Structures are given as structure tokens and as C-alpha cells.
Amino acid sequence: MRGRFRVGVLVFAFVVLAGVLFWGAAHWKPDAAAYPVQGVDVSEENGVVAWPTVEAAGADFAYIKATEGADSADPNFAENWEKADEAGLRRGAYHVYSLCRPALDQATNFISIVPRDKEALPAALALDFIGNCKDRPARDVVLRELKTFIEMIEAHTGKPTILQLTREFDDYYMISDAI
Image (cartoon, rainbow, N blue to C red; front, top):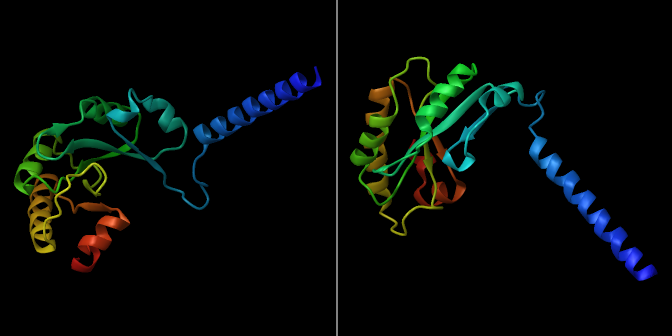
């Protein structure tokens, strides 16, 4: 009987600990004193976003996934773009870059989805190997293609582009050294 009781207590303690950890993870945010301006990054992976809740939690801005590669658009982009604005959040769009598709096609995809909006935050370009094709074009090719992409979307948005680089991507292509 004591063995079952101990197992029951351990199971109960584990469930309580898991609940506390889950609650903490769900409600964690960076310290506002250290990071006074805070925002979110959303895509279709987040499902339906409760924008008033995001704003009430202290977010000042949102970066919303618009496109990926040359032929993929986030199906929630238009709704998220509109709802973030209605919630009073500054908003910007981002593109997930593909090494397998020409920059011209990718920029055309982005431009066809993201409206011109002088109030929008600068567009962001996500550069990562995760989810990208296996091909690794030469550095000079990648730099030339990125230049084309950036010039096109900057002409569309009227603002400089923000690069979101992973360390691995930057180490491989030395993008930071080229800037």
C-alpha cells in the first residue's frame, strides 16, 4: 500500500510541476525594464491570433510572415496584417528566403502579397538553412541574389530591409562581412 501511495505522490508532484512549467512558459516575456519595446513574430503556424490579447500583454509591434520562397504565401497574412493594425500594433512583413529560387521570383511574390504602407515597419528577410533547400550556391551568387531581392522590396516599401540572420547562415555566407 505504501508503494502505491508513493507512486501516487510522485505522479501528483510531476503533474503539478509540469503545470507550473507550462504556465510559466506560456506567460513568460522579456523584462520590460531591459527591453522596453517588445513585439511578436507570427505566421500560420500560430493559428488564429488573438490580437487584442497580444496588445494587452504588452506587445508594441508585430512582424507577420507574408511569403516564403517564390510561390508560397502565408494564408493568414492579410487577416493578421489587418487585425494587428486594428489592435493598435505597429506591423511589418517578413519573407523567408529560399536558396533554390531566383531572387526576382521571390521578391515578386513578396511584392504581390505585401501592400505598400508608409506606416509599416521595414520589411524583414529571414535567412536560415532550416527548412531551406539542400543546395548551397556560391557566396557571390547568394550576395548578388540578395542584392536583387533587397533592392526590389526596398523600392516597393520605400524603407531599408532588416536582415534576420541565423549564426549558421552568416558563418557560411559571411553576409555581415559583405555589408
